[in-house]
Amino acid sequence: MNGHHIKRRTVLTAIAATLLVTPLVTTNTVTAQAASVKPSASVLKKSNSYYRKHAKALGKQYKFAYSAQTALKKNGKAVVWVNTKDTKLKQSVKLAMDYWNHKLGKKEFTQGTKKNHTLTFSVSNAKPSKNDTSDAWWTPGTKKVQVRKYYYDQTTQDIGEAMTTHLNNAFYKKYAATVEAKAKALLASQGVATTDKDYTQKFNETASNVETSLPAYQTLETQVAAVRNSVAEQGRMYEYASTIAHEFGHVMGLNHSPNKTDLMYFESGTSRVNSYSQVTSKTGLKTYNPVTATDKARAQLALKIYVAKQK
Ligand SMILES: [Zn+2]
Image: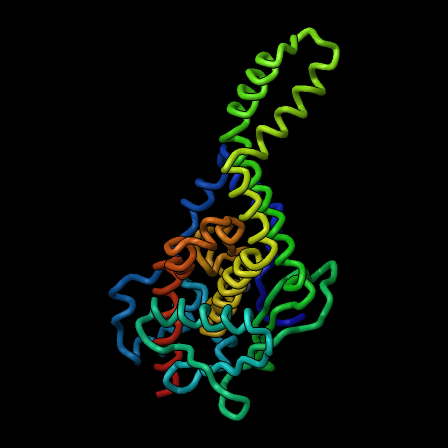
């Protein structure tokens, strides 16, 4: 598959990232040595002739791919035909456009129609291969941003499993000691001695009853059911909003950023989509925008250079 793509970040690596306590020793060193790809305020204020003259050097320094800017109008804006019937995916595309529009302070991406657009968003039925496990990509030649159905279909279950695991772990961390103490006290009040040969079995049965009678357990069950019914799918909606926003970064001519926190990092993604509270709360992911200050400044410069070339 040609074109730029984002490498699929599996749920397992996302979970591993949240559990990783000790940072890798080499990470900081490598980041510190890399030159900054964030254009300064003064670089963003140069003239059109400056941009035309220095386009090549600027592209090298800030990692632009001008050849990918095939879907921009003369004014640098893009019009997206959302060619899918999937309601949730439509929400993801809308959110992806909003992420950039809010950060850039203009309507860089607008929704178009079949007859009026500069690029198409659609779903690809291509199966992943050993050499291509991307979940989405931008193909400048055909002017298509595509997501792979094969992974898209799996993602709700992946997120649901991660979310449920997090909920269960949080519950046990908080209530295990309480449940054990209550079960022990209950057995003692019934005259069951710890030396009783069936003590372990009796303890497990009692602990199980104590656990399920806790109000917090009812809450856990309600939340796990909600994950199955809608929350995991909502998590996927957010995951693909970021994935598609990353591809829109390529549409504007951005190559990958060396910074792990940037949306334009090759393997961008947030484990927030696996968090029940993040997906359901009024703050959480509702106010999250994956476009960083570096992503924003790079996009501004790439678009300025593009527009300068049209004049
Ligand atoms: Zn990419």
